Amino acid sequence: MDTTLRITEIFHSLQGEARTSGLPTTFVRLTGCPLRCQYCDTAYAFSGGDLMEMAEIIRKVDSFTATHVTVTGGEPLAQPGCLALLTLLCNQGYQVSLETSGAIDTFKVDERVSVVLDLKTPGSGEVAKNLYENIGYLKPNDQVKFVICDRLDYDWAKFKLIEFDLASKVSDVFFSSSHDQLDSAELAAWILEDGLQVRLQVQLHKILWGDKPGV
Image 1 (cartoon, one colour):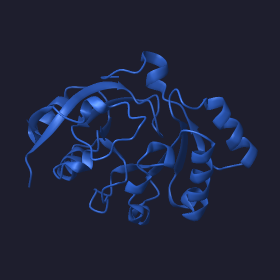
Image 2 (cartoon, rainbow, N blue to C red; image 1 turned 60 degrees about the horizontal axis):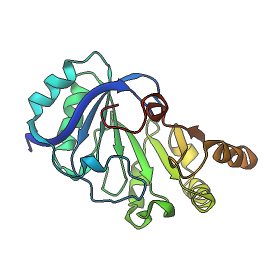
Image 3 (cartoon, rainbow, N blue to C red; image 1 turned 90 degrees about the horizontal axis):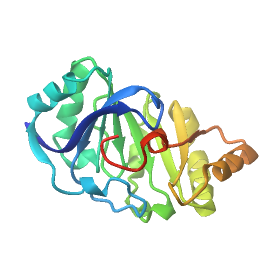
């Protein structure tokens, strides 16, 4: 088993996205990602970082007061040791979520973890990287996210929502407008017009603190 992971940052903040938006959360951001989405806001996590022992990571997480922990990246599953970290965090009693691009197999992720699966739209530039087998591994406690860049992306996401019957597979499906590319009000109007059973998502952390690391 891998006992070290390359970590870009570990910090305490409010969750800005997904089901637990607004709740105090500890974030563990792993370094590295095989994707290059054109709207990526965490390119600083593509390289660098520091090697940390699992026990050191757990101690750092324990130093904060949050009961929720989000493991993110980059693409956290690009490091095989991420699976062991997720299990350790669950064993510590944390409510754990994993933010993943869906380009890497999620089958071995601890079933106690809420997987936030980000299906890449055409506008991301990485739609070909979607590993659709992961949809078959989704649990009711998991979540699916689409980042929408334009109307083409919206129509594509709407088709995937129906094609895979996502609303019946997971508790939450999120449509989020790409920052500075699509106005959230316009996306909201499309959702209402079509009567989609999805949740509009805004990035709370960017509203509060702007687009920067460590928030």
